[in-house]
Length: 252
Image (cartoon, rainbow, N blue to C red):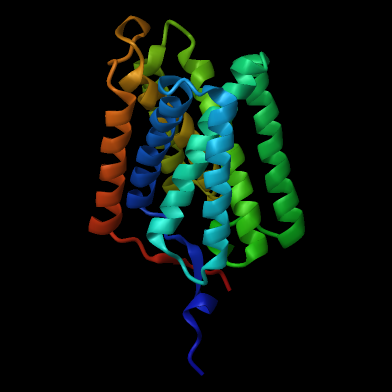
């Protein structure tokens, strides 16, 4: 009897170089897009968070409702997590006044708690097992926390005047390179390395986004947040269609 495709494949893409490339562009878009709504439109972090949280909830509902991996929907949901992560982190660290250190610690705790509950409930947090509504719910909640943590962490590091946005991007890029080396040269759990890399792509995207749109006197290039966001979105769309990604195969 022939197996149904949904019995063989998960609802997330295969983890390849293209995946990580799109992820970095998506996290950068999350920073410029989130700032465009909360800052350039002058709506504030709370209203921006409400808007993007609504988009995120709708995207996750649609993602869970479909039976198979849909590239456009998947990456739309990822972008939704990066934008809501940007405004949530800014609201926590700036509007609530807990600072970058406090926000990063709080969000790290929430992320670890999400992974722990997920593992205790299903016995694994491996992304190629994400296929049921329950595992998808854990997956997207965990991603939202990781994106929010990454924003706060990126701002915390970039706030160091000695590093700035460019120096911070080099640091996070080097850390990602080390994780890639560990993937091929060590026996460290690939699931652990995946989540470490997934978290670190967010602060990398955050500082690159800030580098693009922050004023010249702050160390940025002072590009329009609207144009930067539109350009990043077009690049992501091009990558999705030029380099189609298959769904990841499930573990059996």
